[in-house]
Length: 283
Ligand SMILES: Nc1nc2c(ncn2[C@@H]2O[C@H](COP(=O)(O)OP(=O)(O)O)[C@@H](O)[C@H]2O)c(=O)[nH]1
Ligand SMILES: [Mg+2]
Image (cartoon, rainbow, N blue to C red):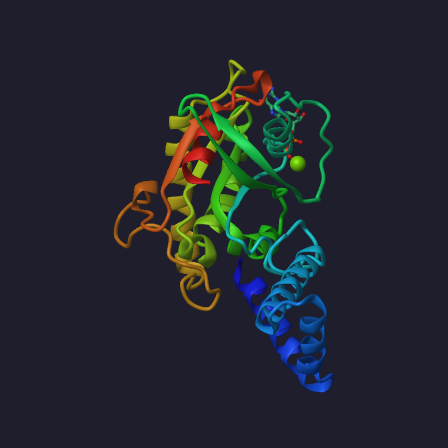
């Protein structure tokens, strides 16, 4: 049970106590006890459990207590077990989400969408010989990523950052800015979310290898760090956390709160073992 549910159950217990005072519940229970031939304590116990259970089911159905789903909740999936799939538009997030969900390659059927896709699915890594149930969230690339991240980061356990490995060079600045937002996000740091840079479309001969993408992103983030450091105090007013170490050129391994790895993958051909392995290990 998560914090919201515990809270809701607490409120339910209060209602039961109040109601019992108003309606002379002890008297009614005595009558039920007499009629059923059960000791009154047992009847009270059974009724309390039934009421709490009904209340819990009700709170789940109404969407309290962590469900996310892109609704109006400002905490996203607060149960803390989300694997966020994020990155710039066109990288293949939705194709990856749908392929992981259905097990069938899902290509050329996606339309650019601002909708958040969310599903609880079983992810299997053949390499690890293990499966894990995880709640996947396809978080669309958005100029105002921060708003979406704020909504979902509090429930994130791990992040798959999808990069188009073919178009990477032309998009590298925007991709780095996007990743910077994630790395500096207070909730992402606080929750110590592991991050996988998934270099998608690797089946294409023109795709850049994961190591190249990783190193190039380190350089771009270093450049951003320098400009942002002189423009604003990112650690101060914005609430963002520090990225990298003072006095050292940026490297992902300096990111103390988040382990960052990069690996190639391709939704095409369902070559997603690196992503599945990451989710099973870290999700
Ligand atoms: N060649 C190739 N194309 C892909 C792959 N994954 C996704 N795509 C295509 O890339 C485009 C954008 O994919 P989409 O999932 O909508 O990207 P999103 O904006 O990140 O959600 C679509 O035309 C996909 O069919 C891949 O592994 N290889
Ligand atoms: Mg999409």
